[in-house]
Image 1: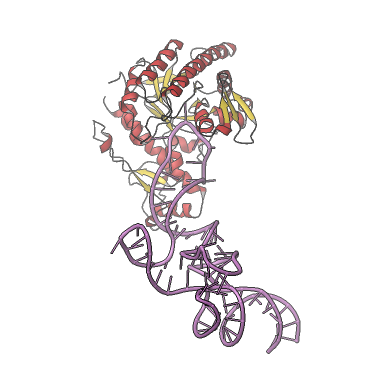
Image 2: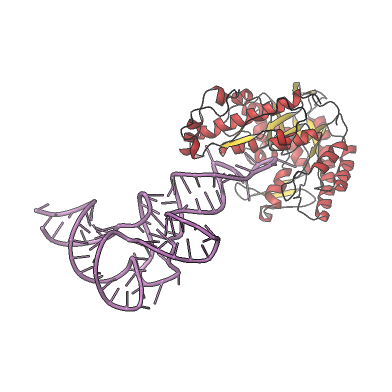
Length: 370
RNA sequence: GGGUAGGUGGCGGAGCGGUCAAUCGCAGCAGACUGUAAAUCUGCCGACUUCGGUCUACGGGGGUUCGAAUCCCUCCCUGCCCA
């Protein structure tokens, strides 16, 4: 098992314990949840997106606002994703949305069709303009179903892009006169799909560049939805113990525990917010007492609040839950009603419950003597 | 009383001789969602079913036709206009 699993780190003057979960505020917002409420849910750090904020409102405007923290009124930590995921979710899934060249990713804007070139250097500059606490190199993720040759090329390109990011990062730190204490952390991202050899090759390319932490990139499940335990565990074993290990886009409560057991300690995912907004609420956290953290015994369940059976269920989502929604006494019948009539408050109450649930899971992981 | 437009599945509303158990939207029932093109998307949505079909259906009744939600007659009922 990995070294110290529950440790405190200080990033730009703010402390944080591992492991931690960051909800995705892609466009500098957790759709309808205020910062005060986020904190009440136990959230300590969030993720914003380079690509989306670059297009709208533009990183220069965020800089003008005094940085993303001030802009969105969030005092906690902020990590920005590089736009690497959009290389995958937009371009690889829809070739008409742009193309990848050695220079960078040429996006056709999802907003108006205009063209935008996101180079590794640009990705760094934008993230510095956003003024985030943690940033990620631009990478080139590929679907796990891609042929090995394609993933091999993506690994090599990701390493070259990581190097360009590293160079631009150092340039920015110097130009902005940032110190060791005030500089943001920089994460490299390990690609390589399902292949041990390619993951290793990628790690070997990234380590000499010296990042503050390393991410597990691309999907962690295969085409059949099976968790790639071997490659997830193997990749973690290749990384220095004193570096942060960031499982990008992870995941379901079960997958977070799986990753954590494999040695990863940072997570971000849209699941708690998106599924909450879609009416799926996590309940029945039975973790307490199971020191082995067997995923099978997690006891995580979910209710679809839009189901007709909740129409007249006047109990809260989960008795004893400390989230703002349950503590506030909002019943299932009420939330059900809000979804029925299309009121945004239904999604907001649900997102808060799910975020609290995720943070409760994280707190439990911190408490487990590993 | 006269004229006129209509009556289609829970609602709205297509269809105007066969390929109609009937486009589509809403409502309803369930599901999906993993570095957010997602307050989105998918499936089901007359009854029964051994899922191949079977039955009852487009206001009621009666015709024409090989065949009618679609054409004709008649009755009933709505909306609008004129008295």
